[in-house]
Length: 244
Image (cartoon, rainbow, N blue to C red; front, side, top):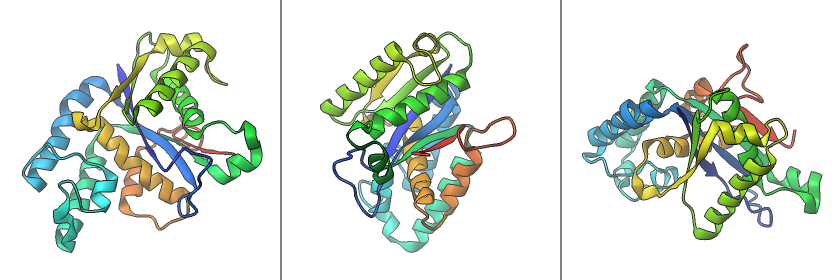
């Protein structure tokens, strides 16, 4: 069985658009379930123990960037450089593929106006579609795992998932989604799920690249991991940017 671990970067609210980050990215990693619960989790926990002497710390981009919630040591430039070198090596060595959907919010609103779909829901459609294709024609071959946010957003997510199972997507019939994917599981950040932490770490570099910001090594690692077509194409397979 495969797992799609999901996280997001940016705000899905179309009523408020941050000029510094006018983008919403939903993305994550596709990984074999046994590997995710075994070798991948062990590698992530070992990384934390080696660098911080503890494995209960949660790898979270916002905390890493702001040197908080266990990452205070990153204020020291030497340790910060060492941390990123080790983190990139960890990510590069793990077996997973990356999928993401990015919505340019201003362009999305300009094109569709009041009919513009919620970026989270639109992105979820795109990623579930790609995940179904990745799973292939295997009954119960996949499960989606996302992070709990707040009761309102979690309820919206449940409704979106139900809608996918009833209506399907543009390229995937509802019966195929229901047959291939056993469900959507929401997990708390405090559960320390390694796959969700890796999903968190891949979405921000993707957002920076789409906005034309300077490329860092973390994006180069992500780029190597994108889901690809048989001839190596990323666009439409591992990364979808909307509107086209």
